[in-house]
Length: 216
Image (cartoon, rainbow, N blue to C red; front, side, top):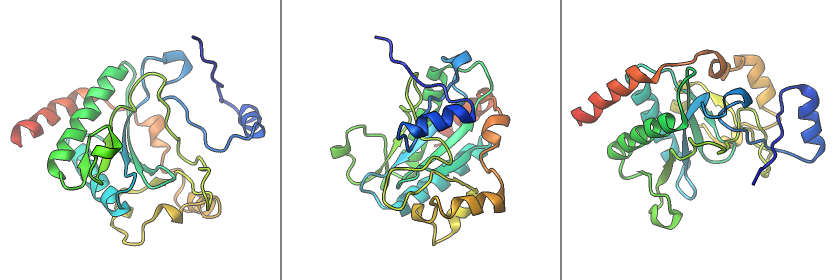
């Protein structure tokens, strides 16, 4: 079965899908010219009923781990209660590569934070923990992009964060809305621009991650 998808690559196309009543957009992780090579590896921190504070703790640990193995990860809110950790990839990696890498990262984090983190797929077996979803890394899977508005009360926005903002006790997804995000972008610029420019090599990070796994 062929499933048609919009390719939104210019303002006119964006206005077209908005006119259809679209609110949040969920693109693939790869582009039309390289459908089998993702531009990013993504770890989705999905809390469901877990407290947002647990998401923050796991995001901190993910940032430390990824930076510690030589990567330069990016962070954003999901626009709801979760967060997304992105690693921009250089061309040549497959979805299998990105999925296996993020699974290894998730397993390290679950080992480090077993009281609040899980990779259990079934929601009723997660025991109130944050789900570390590495299965987003597959062909045709979609994820909400930065600056997309979510169809929820308050019109919250999936918003890029600086890593040190995780130390702010007042941090909340409700702080980032269609009313506040434009001013934030004026103040900080596009914190997610590096996702398009800072393409990273996973091989050295994989070797370093293996050392982490051996050490633990």
